[in-house]
Amino acid sequence: MAQNPPFRRVLIANRGEIAVRVARGLRELGIESVAVHSDVDARCAHVLQADHAVPLGGNTAAESYLDVGKILAAARRSGAEAIHPGYGFLSENSRFVRAVHDAGLVFIGPNATAMDRLGGKKAAREEAIAAGVPVIPGTEQDEGDAALVAAAQRIGLPVMVKASAGGGGRGMRLVEREQDLAEAVAAGRREAKASFGDDRMIVERAVFPARHVEIQLIGDRHGHVVSLHERECSVQRRHQKVLEEAPSAVVDEDLRRRMGECAVALARRVGYDNAGTAEFLLDDQGRFYFLEVNTRLQVEHPVTELVTGVDLVHLQVHVAAGGRLEDLLAGKDLRPRGHAIEARLCAESPENGYIPAAGLLRLVREPEGPGIRVDSGVYTGWEVPPFYDSMLAKLVVWAPDRATACARLSQALRDTVYLGIPTNVDFVRRIVDDTAFRSARLRTDMLQLRPELAAGPQEGPEDLALAAAVLCQAVAPRSGGGGGGNGAAARSGSTAVWNDLAGFRLFEGVR
Image (cartoon, rainbow, N blue to C red; front, side, top):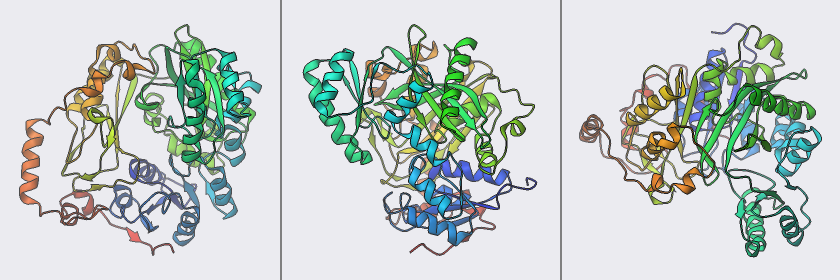
């Protein structure tokens, strides 16, 4: 139990693996955690891991995790003093940040002003230019479709047409032919409006071949900002990351210093505090260009933690409570040590166009061993709902060098089993075993150029896993149907997670 924890109780405004990970970090600091959940998530892993839980009602994100009123009511009902947003959902919503402060609570994340100044691609690009950070040639001014088409013609094709708000590849189009410009701008605008409620667009020159390299930042409320160095996230499908690693195999000490200085200068310019990530494209000549800032904790934060020895959730909490980085990081050697790689394990079928999957997990077996970390949000007998992001878990490995880390990750993926629904485990293993990945010849369009990696055969689990699955099916009662983890396997207590609920208390639902 930590001495003098900065908060007594913190509400986690999220679900799944990130909520489990934050709850673990809070427990290590001696802080009680409060989970919130939709109806279908009543038996989700994050609810079982937390000290307290508040049902929000509804099933969709809009009915639950995106409902600011319900989140704040849950915080009041549970007696929480602060809110940690995780990533996704409300984590980058400056209106939510202000509402949290107006409710007399602490938001464990950046301040709303910094979020506004960096949250959109247009605003972030303007701030980067003012801070002297190199940006991709383009325009952040949107004066209508015709003006954007004309700007693209001036910049020179190929170009990227991007939504100013949001991320995840939504509203983004690569345009290589002039005759496709008008439709790309119109289609991107429609998608941006539907996804983010904001149809403003920007146009930038397409940089390829390129690598995606980002800098992890942490700032405090006293004007200090520190770079925790780079992560490489070049293996992507449809602009969404699949594998992430730290450090990058192509970033030397000089480039690391220059990228870190640019990221810190931008953060200081806007008064940034708490965790954030500045993302860059790195071309084949070693030139880097600013992309955007993610004003939250990143999915891939574990690889930074493993190579620096810093717990980012602990830092987030202490900074939000007013702590100084010079004290929190005193005596720490932050230079990267060894190599870490993270694989995002998702309920989806890469062999069938990455179609997301839902359904009962009849057997979950996640790897263990030296240098292996699994941030998981699932267990045997839980039913994966269709309403949210498809990620089940993050498999992270550390080793003294990249080659050993690759070998360790490959074996760990072979030891990973999720029976009952399609997953991308075999797809990720094919990437890790590919010669180009092993030799670090990475680029953002790698998977687009190598469709056979996604189309390869789905390999079955090992004999031991099959035997366990047969045994599980033989002894477990039939599933009673219905979503939300209420299947028979979960009700029968077939998973050990139900055996450790001491101190758990369910608060009344939020109306």
